[in-house]
Length: 580
Picture 1 (cartoon, one colour):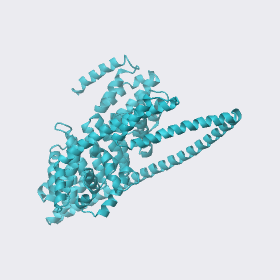
Picture 2 (picture 1 turned 90 degrees about the vertical axis):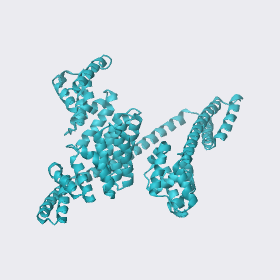
Picture 3 (picture 1 turned 30 degrees about the vertical axis):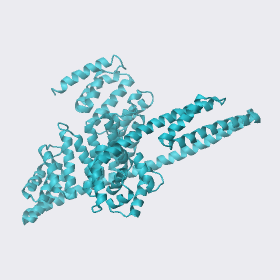
Picture 4 (picture 1 turned 90 degrees about the horizontal axis):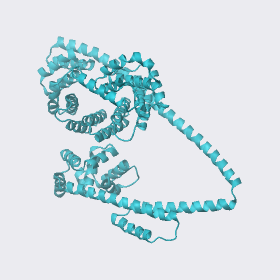
């Protein structure tokens, strides 16, 4: 409390000063808004102390007070039990209130429906918040994407959840918020883990860990280490699991002790260190949650069975069965709620699509009627000759525009040197004007300007690609690939693949980010893409990955369609990857 008081005073003074230049809100509002994220309980208490005055405020102040109250309650994990208050707040900001607060109003409307278990409506309002947010990265954009990702995950819509967390990661990268970027990577790793894609999951957890430097959030580091330890335990590398659980064991607290002790007990049991395993399982009987106690009773029953302690085995087994039934009951209830939420979400999508189809049909009917009336009116008011002349003039202009567009499309496919030659041709035409119409002259100027811009962009991209190519050719991994190709004895190992992937992350991170955002890849698909980008021929890629040429060609064709969304063959892949 001693640390909060100076902060409270400073924020209060800033609020008083700011109110001299903006709409007059009570200065305590700015204090409450600032405290909501760091000390939500203090923000709630401050707002509650102002409740008696609220009846004397104008509507704008009352609505902002209500919005701040719901915000503070949300930050304090106090669930809303009704949507009536937030609906009135949202209606105000949708119809004349301060539009800068509209994204926040949509966000807390979505959070209210999240608390009420109405996922479809929550997602609808979160999406509206994204639509009205100003361009650029912001903390609110992060909150919205994270909430949408969580709701999608709860409904087993993993692709949609992953897309939200990727958007959050991009937002936080722009803000250079490393702690939040790490959290985004953890969420993506958790999604991959839920899909049993353990290699991808581990890769994201390790990337998240590298973002947390010394002195950063220890709780976040412990959470990541727990996830990594649990993952290593799942894939059978218990020694590495033991290494990663050590730091969390030093920082246990009430919120994470059950998870940490449960993982530690299982690790030591699998390592054969029964005394340590028994210690953590017995501790879980006192401090664990229902899931931790279930795991503890189960393993203690197994341990005592191995020791032939029949009485203890029977006791622990009976307790395990009791807790297993309790967990099953909870899981069944959650599954029913999850299925209902998923059904409601899918139903909402179907209803929205039906409404869209009806609205589009009505628009077409109205458009057809309006065009019919216009056509009749023009037929009455215009002479046939005037109509023909207007149509002919319009047709000529449209043909000129279409011709210019087709020309620019063809130019876009030319090499840099060919574009420069064409630019010189346009310059000579502009330097020697003819008696052509002003429209043609304007088109030439616009084409010339666009062409110069394309040339500059193409040269910059080409320079960047050449730099990447040079770095890759000088890399240790490139030498390793050439060695394997020349020797024709060894294939590309998983260890080589990990080094290859890390080489790209180190030397060409922008390329890797663009590639990984295109789709989700299997290990073999990613190997083929990275080797192809390195300039390895399809024949050598087939050897390194132990695939026949025909199988590799089919995979490359599928990969091209997968990442480009266009029809094409294996030959198109190399050019597409190089241009990425």
